[in-house]
Length: 79
Image 1 (cartoon, helix red, strand yellow):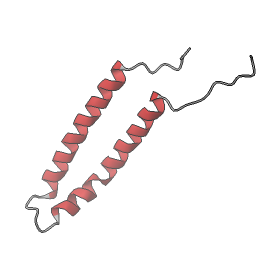
Image 2 (cartoon, one colour):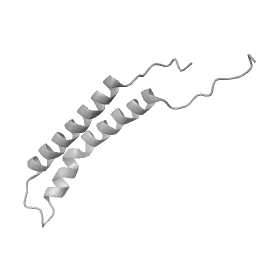
Image 3 (cartoon, helix red, strand yellow):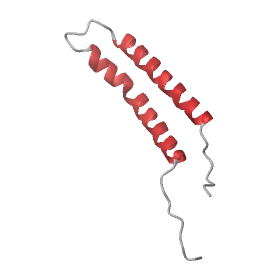
Image 4 (cartoon, one colour):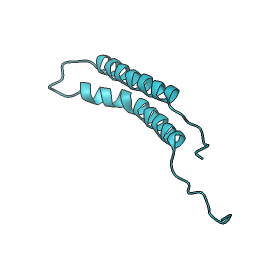
């Protein structure tokens, strides 16, 4: 039948976009969070060290996500 509509679902492109937005939010709040952690009484580290470590972990996650995108099929043709 020609009246059948193709069901629209959330795909890999939307998930990729949401992941990038999540990374942007993490990067925006990292300086404030690292300073708040450094201000705790039982932490003997400075904010720079905490921030540097968090950025390194985020870089690893971003690299893994980039590899996943490279090796995935993001075409819209699902016939």
